[in-house]
Amino acid sequence: MRWVFGGLVAVALSGSPAVAQDTTRVERLGPAFGDGRLWVRPLPFTPAELAARIGGGASQSAIDSIVSEMIQGYLDAMAAGAGASQAPSWVTSLGGQTVGVDPAWIHLGPIKLPTFLLGLIPLNVQANPQQAAQARRWAEMRQMIQIQGARDAALDDIGRAARELRERREAEREFDRNQRTPPPTGGEGRP
Image (tube, rainbow, N blue to C red; front, side, top):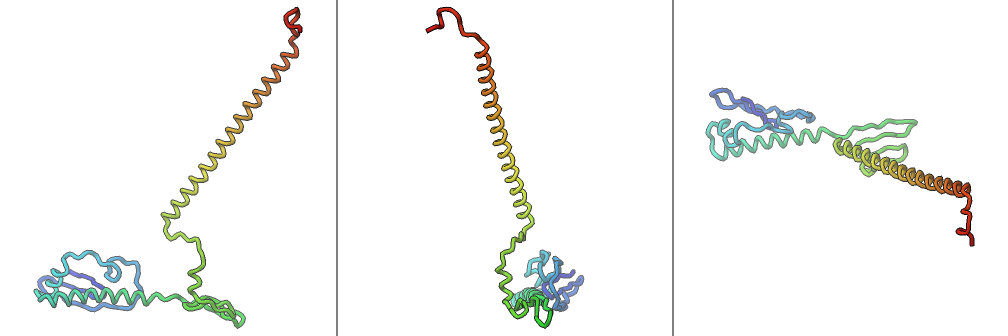
């Protein structure tokens, strides 16, 4: 069996005590899950059972020292990975003036600005793609609601205009009918 804890690899052969090899190397952490430096797969045994198997029935102090060695290896691997990721230096010289960005400064010819000012620039960056997709869906829904509201308002305006036009035409027709109709004759309608 083989267990990886930080930089410590414990190999247990069948029937023999475990042999530990130190494989700590300074290298950049990668996205490899389960290699023991960043994320440890679940153990097949509890730490006490594992220490007893590795130590061969050792005392509590031996178990504690083995577990602390495993944890220290993990912490060492994390520290080695954190130190390996320094910011790159993108600096060049143009016309005798230094231009670019390094870990400490932003060089703009004769002007040097501290790099932390880059963090103060308001960027509209969505780090979470699900939030960005949800925001897009909400914006589309809002736009559809506004478009439908405008359509409803336009339909209401068209309906009102059509009603007014019908009423006006009906009034004109009635006026024309009244003009063509002679006034009543006889004594009834005269003053």
